[in-house]
Length: 394
Image 1 (cartoon, rainbow, N blue to C red):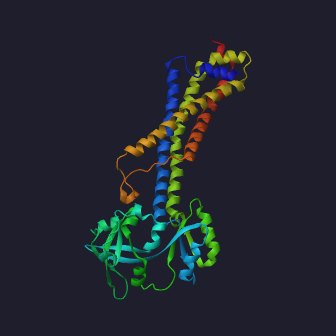
Image 2 (tube, helix red, strand yellow; image 1 turned 90 degrees about the horizontal axis):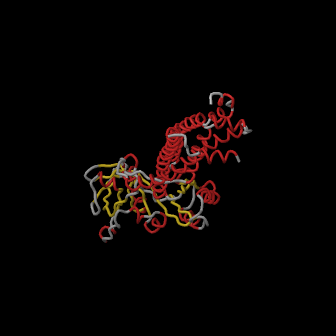
Image 3 (cartoon, rainbow, N blue to C red; image 1 turned 90 degrees about the vertical axis):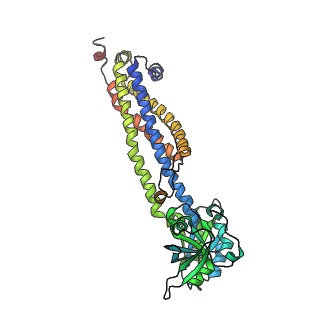
């Protein structure tokens, strides 16, 4: 085919350094745009995965909130028998003040030690195993978040007091038996764990059903597990999945990811402008050859496709090299990056990276489309140039 013959002959410039330089500038421009897009989108995807992991460890797959008059024991038994559920654990919440060398507002979460480890991976969250000293074990123990412990200058084994809101504003003594770190600064600053029965006692919650954290069996989608619970309890329970509990945060990150993609795609668009320059120079250098081929019977459609193919090949080379270099750049940045983030703002001091196949596919297709789109104008100019005009002064 004439187009394949022309591509084999003219794809690598032989007319001089200027055209060769334009070719590599076009390729390098696309490569740089692809690498920047991959780095930014990988960071955004990494943050989404980071937040998903952290919030799942806090709230489990989903939380079941009793509504109406549901017997406490009956609800737990029914949840255990739902096929999609692997494990459950009851918990409760209360607001109070924590007193030691300073005072800090704290959200107390009452947990059941017997079942909590089946839902929450405490071995990854506890900075050290809880103290097993009988003196502490038999007293009112408390697990402090790492930032909360730092704020009130408390360590394992210290005594602290909880100010319970009420008419008497009573102080309840506790002994710090462990420090937890979920990896979310705000959570580690404001949350502490105590025994569920102790929570009920000090807040006078002797009746009513606790809340339940639910862990689904591997491979069970969230919507399926939530639907099974809703069908079983109807209006007697409210089900909140982890992404519903933190919906605003995740929607904000996903929206920011889309906006950054559109903004940074401008860089790839600017790289595509180089393709216009390359093909305009190419059409100028090859106007004599194109005129001879047109006089010999090559149709305008063939010339048009030839220049479009050139733009597509430049885009394909740039995309291939950009994706390969982008993967390497993401891996190196993830491994050798310094601690540049404020943990109090971003919940981590390092940028998380996650390369998603879908992101890479969208970036590649968008870049290739822009390179082909920017090839249309010079391709039309070359296709409809009159052979007589090109050969007149030859």
